[in-house]
Structures are given as C-alpha cells and as structure tokens.
Length: 431
Image 1 (cartoon, helix red, strand yellow):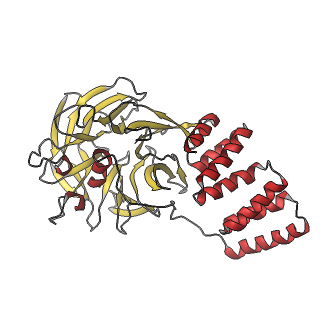
Image 2 (image 1 turned 180 degrees about the vertical axis):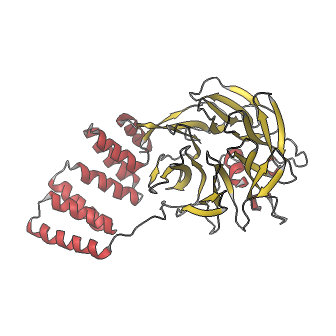
C-alpha cells in the first residue's frame, strides 16, 4: 500500500484508499423474517386493543426497526413520544434511525436532548457507543507541522514517530505522555514508518536516502534500515532497486516482515505497482516471499509471539484484513467490510485487533474482539483517523489524525469512558 501511505501524508494529506459504506462482519446472522413478521402482527393486534400503551408502541417500533421497515419504526417511535414525550429509549433509537438515514442533524439534536436531560451514565455510554466514540481521546502532539505513525516501545514508556518539522520526514521519540521530545534519526532524505523490535533495542524504519535518481520524492525507492539504540548506529538491512517499506519485527529482532513491489515486472507508474509481503533474516541476509498473488498486499504487523502476520489485501478490489500463520503456512480472511480497511494490529494478548476503515465518509478507528468477533467503532470524526497501535498493556490505542488541522498523534484511553460533557461538546461541534 505504498501509494496510500505516501498520498496520505505527502500530497495534500488526502488518503486514497477508495470509498466504502457501513461496515459489516462476516459473522452476521440474518434474523428469522417469519418470526419477526409474526411478532409485528401480534404487537399490532395488541396495540389496536390498547392504543396508548407505550410499552406496545415502543416494542412495535423496535420490531419494525429490526425487520428493516424504517418508515414504520419511525411512525411508532413518534407514537411513543406523543404519548410519553420524555421516553428516553424512544428518543435514542429514533436518533439512531435518523443516523442510519444520514439525517445527522436530526440525530444529533435528539442525542443532545437526551444527554442534557439526564446524568445516567448508562445512557451516556449507550449514546457514545451508537455514535462510535465510547472512550475519551487525548492529543499527544500539537504543532504547525505534521507528526504521524506513532508506535510504542515494548515497555510502553516511549513512542517512536515521524515528523516533517525540518521540511522532510525524520524519526523522533517522546514519552508516552508526550514529553521529552527527542530527535533520533535525521537526514536530508525521508525517514518513515519506525517501529521497535520486541526487545526494545532496535528500531526499523524506511529511508529513501539511497535513491538519487529521481527528483520526485513520491517516486523515490525506499530501503529498510535498522537503528541500534545501544551503539547509536544505523545500517541498511533491505537494499534493492525496488521500493521496500512498512517493516514489522517478528519475535526475533533479526527478522523483519516488510512490503515490496520487487516481483511486479510491469512498466507502470509507482502507484500502479502491486506489492507482496516478504520476510528477511538480517543475520544471514536471506529474504523469503510470504505472499504470491495478483493482489496488492500491505501494512503487515506481526503478533507478539511472532507466529501471526496481519495484513491487508484486495483480491476483490476491496482492501480487507487477512491473517497468515507462519508456523502452518496458512492464510485466512478474518474480517470483511463493505469497503476498504487497513493497518490491522493485534493487541499483545492477541485477544483484540484494531484497524482503521472508511465509514460514513470518515476514516475512523475500529476494534474487533478476536474471540467473539464483536466489532466496535472507536472514533467518529470528519478528519482522517488512521494507523492505530495498541499500547503493550492494551489500555491505549495510539493513532494519528488531522482533525485539528495538521496530522498529530492522539490516543484513545480504553480505561476511561467518554464523559457526558465531552460527548455533548463533540456533538455540538458537528451541528
């Protein structure tokens, strides 16, 4: 996904990955239509006998909503609110119905009405979940230049990231609180996509410093380098006349999974080249190809135990998330959206996965429970929220966003449900 990465941060900050609609899991079970219809008819009969029973009108609205008859659902939500104007659940579900129809102003107005009239934390959490912002979000960097692609050290105390404050991309580190900002790797070329090894000693990154043949930085070839924190030295570990990028360490500091276009012989522009996944053993300089297809494979991340590689591929023209078992040499699709998604990343315990996807014309952060397949939306903003990374203790998710102008680094605090006042302010900002 070289073209997506470069275009995201070097050409007007416009991320090109294609359009997509609402997300949906493969593990989706269709409701029993006959059973739903029987329930609706039964409720209609009962309501005819007791037309001012809000329990019946609300139940009928919910049944119609579940059956996909949104016009009827709206009618019965209105009936419920006509009988009981402060029926909170009817307001919440009516707002959710408006949101599904892209009637955002109507939805936000109703959500605000509920939030301003109650201090019930359960209702706040329910609305936050429906809006796709269940946790508090904090910004770690703030500047008139771009900071992006943050990644945690194994102990979670340090964040490595890239910044263009000098006019090109360089590698910096900071504490997990956003303090002690330190320049680590600097060159006239672009240094990007830095990640720690699992022992914390090495940092792998990409650089185009060796390609002087092209003046257009968008078209320059990148190599993969390693910075040794103990010796303060850098060495190239993947050098080729092709573009190599997006390094990810296995559990061995001398093994790196990366992306390359080296096996696409076509004479086409860089943004049309197809990429595959490879693994290099830097100790003996042996490189093996991991994927072999006619698709565009990219953005790999390796599980903490070194066994699984998550990555994206587009066999059906849509970027979806796949998992490769390096021990069994097996590949399986683990998530399917109605549109593109990218940059999957496993939590250290492998129970959860975070990634970003485009939904409702937003690029936002999502999380999937790897045990039961439950999917949650964690951000919902008009800006681009992308490339999430868990902290080692899975208490935070690091990501970058241009929601406040330039790209900056933020984190989602998974231990802190969003506050009522914070949620109100966020909704008000969208009206």
